[in-house]
Image (cartoon, rainbow, N blue to C red; front, side, top):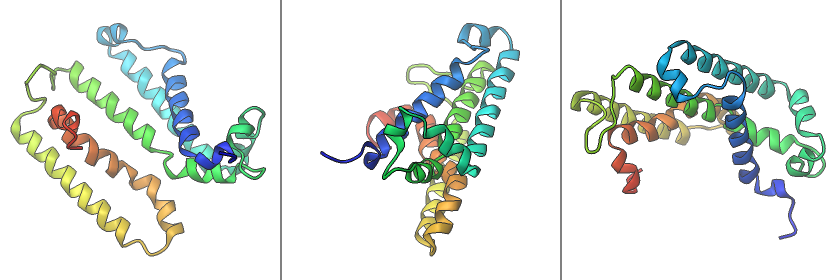
Length: 191
């Protein structure tokens, strides 16, 4: 359509996050389900990987120069430059920089709870007791309302953009908790 690839920033953004997730999980030590089930030490290895990922994200988000060096190499520059610089890419990447980390962390917590038999996945069986499910649903609704009020009351776009990465975990929770309570809700299109 005679536009630069970065004009459609969402496609490279999703691709980069997918590659970051893949690289994080593929780097040494590779942790597979069989090893993780046999020894809790592998869980610490995965936690260490997540901490390293968080440190890298934090470093790149607060060092525009380092970020530009990483994404200004050819052929990366062809995908991430817009009008000769990567500032727009840095801005877009920085807005949702912690969402993938939060998703990976919640997935880790889910697997750890499953390993310690605090939750079980069976056909038709709820993951949690009705009391825990109700608490999670309540947290999800409160999270949705809190985030909605915060987003609608934001007066300064720059300030909201600065706070968004830190509060984006609320969006992850308001999607995740109802899905955990009843996975059929997501497949039915409720969330």
